[in-house]
Length: 364
Image (cartoon, rainbow, N blue to C red; front, top):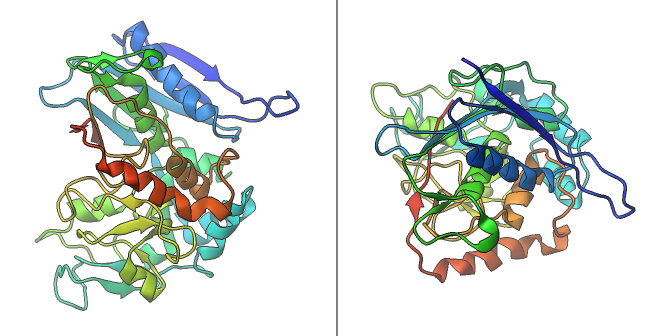
């Protein structure tokens, strides 16, 4: 079976007119993917390439084909395990903005970090208790971090090639949309009221492959009897999770990695300045995967749902998160404006619009 291959390199222009670094996206298209859909994926990647200044190559397998009834899309991001020390050192070496300086300064020193945790077999509150407790004993889950391979590349960590089950060769992510649904492939003239924004949804899924993921989804899906984890048996904290806080975790001086419906928010400064809200989990949270912004507040592209006729765009919140986890993002406000980002965008939540979940994301 022949595989269609294409590669694009998109670079933004510096003020003086010279080109600066930008990601290269190599696409392997699943046979049967229409030229219209292929161009849609290329346009989606171009959005990210125009905003990121990292000279890395991202390999993606993508497709637009009929899927089983009820499945609009599916996606997986390749991930790799690193020591917390290696991750923190890489972030420190990659500082390019004031945001980066604040973010790195908020990370715990040393070889491990603490977290607010729950639903484990060895919880001091009882087997599988939903009551949060502080886990800072330096075990494997405190000393390691699992990040997307694309993010690792941006940090200069040189991940080993990964092969997901659905990918064509080594890849950093797999994305497939169902051609059984109606999509609008041309966002330049708005999105038809009876269709989903294909380029916007594709850009959303690419955002996950770039590192907008949360290990809380692993905890959430695997935290019911009889399969409770000990807190040293799973090492799925993501780079984004290092900036995930709640009021309780801020008071304890640790990140929040619990599976429950308490409010969790993005913060660059150890929880002192709350930013945009995160979703809290499908099973034990509010019903949306934790690897997203909170639903129906119109925080950014990485919201968990979208409505027909809705134009999806990358927001300042999306860029701030990408900057914090290791991508070089020059086109965002300086830190003096950081506290205003979440509040200003959250006001948009008053706007009424019917939204639907637009994809099924893999947890691998």
